[in-house]
Image 1 (cartoon, rainbow, N blue to C red):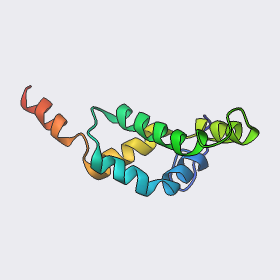
Image 2: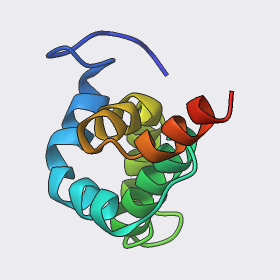
Image 3: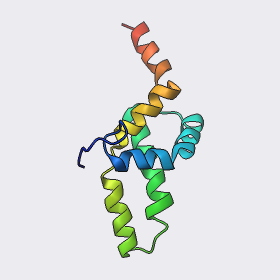
Length: 100
């Protein structure tokens, strides 16, 4: 994964996936519970792979190109953006602070 900032994001691939899947990511955040930021990132990556890579003919040039493109995405950065916007982990963090 190569960092080449683009429009304030890690790279163009990260920015592009964020822009293309905003509605999908928003729906996921509204419908699912998450344990941590990595869980959010993994969920986003899995759904995009299902929607894009898995729909292409297995072993095809197009499938390989899309898979390679998605390897450049900083999924954690996208997840952190949504965790912050939706306060996804706020309740868990409050519980941890209360038990200290």
